[in-house]
Length: 132
Image (cartoon, rainbow, N blue to C red; front, side, top):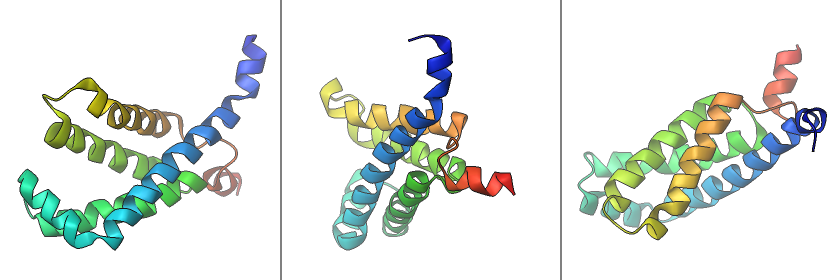
């Protein structure tokens, strides 16, 4: 594939990344929101300060941030927040464990970081808003 084709499909690649990242976080956030007591207990077991509050924060950021990423609406903000959540998840639940347990979290950290840097692309609400 030559450079012209790579550039041609850049926005399609960003859309595919947004779909994948967005759906994963929407599902994860929904699971936390609908089972918030369990999430709060888990966060407490991990020693996360203000576990009850932080469970709500993470659940809301994952669900609504996932929607924002999916549709590319002000998506740099949720991608940054989701990347931070993934760093905390890696440090609190995966550090010192096997790589296989952390690989999905590492991929999500890298993908949210890439979307933060690159933006949403032309197939997004951000692109529509920037045209005005």
